[in-house]
Image 1: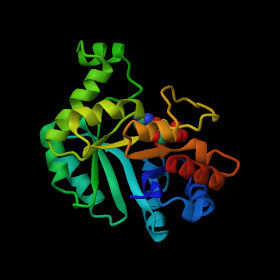
Image 2: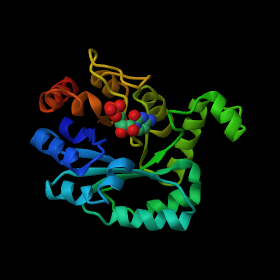
Image 3: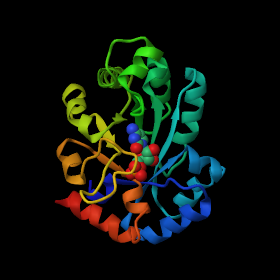
Length: 231
Ligand code: C5P
């Protein structure tokens, strides 16, 4: 796998036009894009066809969470799209939901489990989930259960990637957002690492949004990111 295969650019835009313009600007410097709820909904899903027509790979970040039959039915559509290489579900949906989702995917597709949202803190899990576990213990436990149910990997902070690889094995895939150049704006991310640190920690894929898409020269920033990953 080349570094280009491991860089996923988050297309967080509120219109099809803005997303298309970014795909054009980035050109062949980026081959893998993440599509979340905002862009999926404001384009009526057509962003998937647009990316496919540009021969780009897609991480469909819709985080399914419902009863097993409903989630598996949605996964069947995601799995049926040639350009979708990665999609995700919530690990807290339980073993049956995960296993039924895994059964829908092609062998070359990666099904990721969302463990504990990084926006949660220890107080939230105490109040809402009535658990004395910390968020990171909860995330670790959910990662292990998701792996038992057949998930290919997790979305996690690059700071957690090392522990997850240690407890779930090197083959369990880690996809890590919260990546920043050492001199770039933190934005609203609190736990950030540089591309080099993230890869050293065991991140398999890096998800990068604003440091590239918000830059004056996005293509130059994507190339700089690839260079930093290479080293
Ligand atoms: O712009 P930025 O590089 O912060 O974008 C990171 C992307 O990864 C965004 O689409 C964000 O929603 C997503 N993400 C994240 N933290 C998580 C899970 C997903 O930043 N824990």
